[in-house]
Image (cartoon, rainbow, N blue to C red; front, side, top):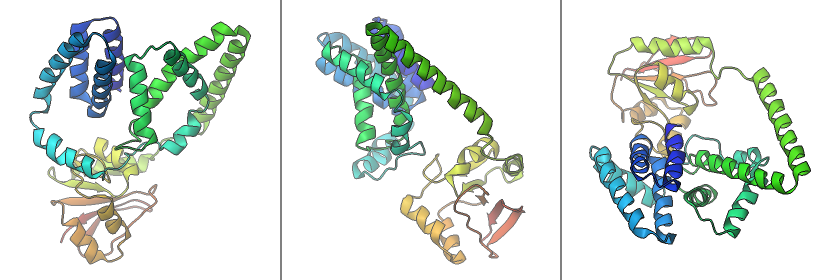
Length: 317
């Protein structure tokens, strides 16, 4: 969220020619969130290629690169070897976000106005960095390039901005139509908010939250495995222990194939052997809201928490 705010701020500072603040903002993005910095870097590079004042953009780019290098020195090997190699092999998932199929329906209400804004700028040949960023994120999401679901967040932000611009164009040209559309958007938005306020509730209940918080009492050097990504954020936030989760965080060493092998095995000995990839003490969390609920009745698994629907096992073998 902070990186997205800084990204929009950087676009604004670039437009206003506030070079020092622009560079500071860009370097801050590099230190806060790599995917957002990737979008900025690609957009700025394309802007450099099509802009007339290349010298100014080169100078800005050099300062941003030089000041960003210290941020990545400690994990230089990870960035250039362990991270780039999987990108080349195209073996990285989409990320745990709303998928593109769902997003297409969620964005239908404002997508027409966004297209109006796009077309208007293209006709006037105003290829600014916001427009370029929108094209880049559209390509990543549509062609499902690495972590594509993650970039739906960026794309959605850009589309909302262009939708506002497109709506303004409609209102200025046909005021009555604009008033009706605005009224419909406000009414539909109000209905959605009221409906969600009525039906929404916590994604986990108080009992499970207390169970997760109780894991703070296990060994300080222990790992907690979330056998479903559904519980990953709560385990990370409230167990205060190192969390292993499918496709998330720093301690996951398995690819999708290995996770499927772990999820689908009915052989407890095989499950134990698979878990030996991780250091001990290791605890396995199984919650009531996850679709997959493995239960291992074996001397190698000590059941330290056993409620009606939630279990925590400790790997002993």
